[in-house]
Length: 114
Image (cartoon, rainbow, N blue to C red; front, side, top):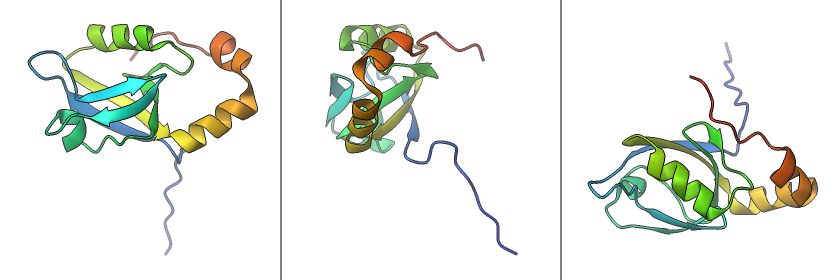
């Protein structure tokens, strides 16, 4: 018997982290791309990688949002934060094929109801 697990988003990873006492989770991002990981942080312990783009924060789509808007989402988030990330090379290819107008204007950035 062969069993397959089919993922609906095969190149995306979901990582759950805890904020530290200062409210940070341990990575730096620029233009939605993770550029640095803080040593011994929740992000480092849970496998967040550089050269990946943020796709969702706690289920909310952040593609096309400015860093300041993403930062506000992190600030308002509860102590446990779940992010969805994708390798930057793949993200950039998808965005290039979609065009900027679709990313910025037509994507749903609403907060999901759980």
